[in-house]
Image (cartoon, rainbow, N blue to C red; front, side):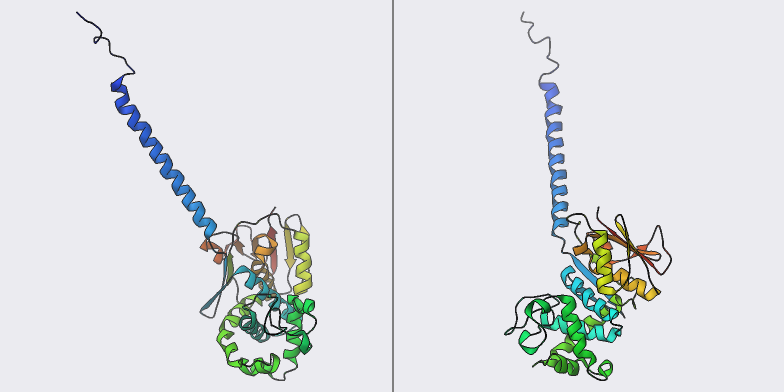
Length: 291
């Protein structure tokens, strides 16, 4: 009698009946998990950096480059002691003229945020392409118009910009007003920016120097932090909002104003300010840059 079938191999077909499907199932689960992970990372990488400002029941959105330029324009006005109305006019004008981008081209020899022309005495090309210089020249012309604060923006545009289409500026007045209210500190915690991760370390000393140059506010740099003791609650919010508006270029990771904090993130949560876990006095600001 042949006894070869009486001793079954423990590693034979019976064991393989459940082992092979198990391995296959684990491989499928792993591939699904990898696909989900890669999909999430791809979506996160495709998130469009956006800044949003809210005031008086309205919301306006700009990208970080535009918001950065808006912050410079607003800062110049505040350093000069000009009212928020001047900032609204300047921002509406820059949105119409250049979409708040410091462009190097335009009609004939027009360049920059306000499309100012060297041939019309606004300055040379290099000067006009400096956003702070361009804003100062715009305000120089604006303040020479008596009663500009109470005038329609179309009238002002015609007199300052000598525009052939002054009515177009009115289309952007509400956007200018929303951003002006936030950047001058009249609206608190109304501006946030959804941003990608910083592409390198920030520089607290350079950030402190920019605060002084643009806003005329003294900041103290210590490690990754810049701290500001503002003269008023409104100034504190102007400083904090300026810092968020320029967060992409300056690699800022968080801004604390009093008991509120903005934290850099890719998600929609970065459009809002939250309760700070380590609050400051209401007139103090702390800006933290990437390490």
